[in-house]
Length: 324
Image (cartoon, rainbow, N blue to C red):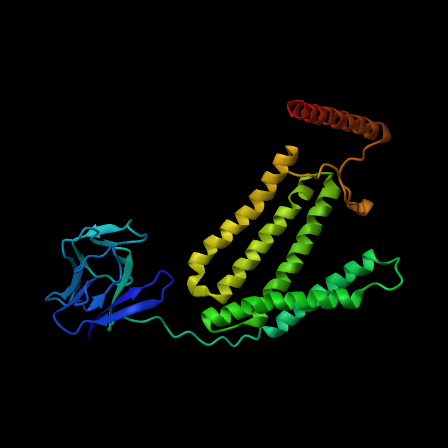
């Protein structure tokens, strides 16, 4: 029976391991320690692991500046001068994470190898994407003699395959497994989800005569893309995912905020969509119908607002020319 101290990275990867072979195990930055930590926030001789008469391992702080902290979060755990080691405890020495284990403690059960066949589901999802795209071409090009089915559908299939291959290559480089069909399934499901989300918002706008579903459609697409990239990265590199997820969230926020800011600066509005630009079957319409007099009155009010805004814009331009 022996005690082992492991230097663990945030994602769970073990950077170094030292086995206690004598009465104590020394930890610190100096090279004469049993476990050497390349950490400027650790002392040369930071801590020592000893076993008491009852067989309980204790980690002793050697009067250091940052001490021994136990708990979640860097520098936020409770500080200990002497810590009686508990199983699965998160121990911080400086900015380094340690884990103390005993050879007699039970390990997690063996995980079975995944035998699920992903490729049939991935190919089925790809066929669903091509069927959806073919339907869209048929609806839009119903009056044309020869719709471009072959070039459009083949280009879409190649594009999705390249997208999946990029993340598969990333997974091969970082994690040792490509999982191409898993990535293909993710991107196909995301494509279908984005299409049907957009159609649902359009149907809701037409049925209720609300503009806000159309105004948020593009931003909803950004959220779908961010969730797709999140799923790809979690599959490609699960070890670094705790760090990568913050990058994905930051890019998604920028993709939402920057267009909003540009639209507001250019037109003092959060969106350029000001009128209903979709049409559907009358059966879907649940909003109260508007008669011709009401329509003409609303059109006159809209024209008045447009004229006022145009006059303000022209006045601003004239003032700028006078200043020049």
